[in-house]
Image (cartoon, rainbow, N blue to C red; front, side, top):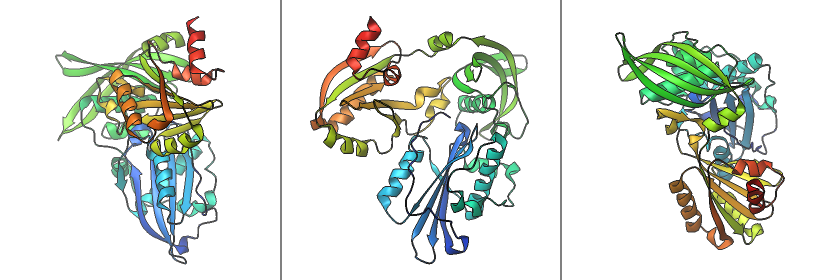
Length: 390
């Protein structure tokens, strides 16, 4: 799952955690395991001081394992909210509360992926090394997978998640979605599913689903056609069989054409950048934040992953809007639907940000352009647009 986030390092907890001094309070996991990532949060009380100690573990099932660790000591609710929003605000997730034993099991389970991917454990390991010991829970029952995964609500959602996990070579999730069956329709290098179209096919044996998927692996882009057979069991679906019927390698240009979509852009001049920036940070508290050389990108994701339910899935359909604030004081706002860009404009006008913003222009581009501007050497969006049109 390719969602950018900025890690905020907590303060006041950078010492070795004494397990005997910690009393378990609560723990939760996000229900995003089928997207390939999970955030685990554990809250403790220090017995000696009765102060709170919060731990956050960010797990990537595709290539990093236990990728990031953050902690906060103390009872500052704003600091905790900021860190939570930074880590889970872009995941489109819900929290599922779990026991101390389950939390300890997951930390150890996540760490085994670091061995598999040959990745080091995150910094400040001394704060969580007491959680790395094995815990006697049986993951083969998929009980923990169920707590880390949202309920499947449609056949299309089941198929899209199954293919997403198959192309990522995420064996555990594939088996979970197929009721324990060791299916392996895709045997290539781990890949990202960018786009998938599902077609129903009926024959003498019943209904099967033929999927045309655009994927990206380290060697480039491919179109994979997969035939899937599934069955409903008590309002849940299981994949009974899946096989790849064709593979076509394509160029980056061909892939770009397949992913082409309109981008609606509104450009504002920021009238007082020094006062505007803290106000905008508060507005964008739950957005993913990525600094660049010429400015800062804020990505607003949809509140859930309902785009996975679509018969025509696109990975980037989980993005509700982009906000790029330049060092020179331009705010570039972008969305992929005209109705969405109008909602973003209305939200900015309805907040305490409007006194700082002067509308300069609106654009509709036939293909996304904002990321190109961010990565270019241009400081002014209008100059960039003129240069690309020449």
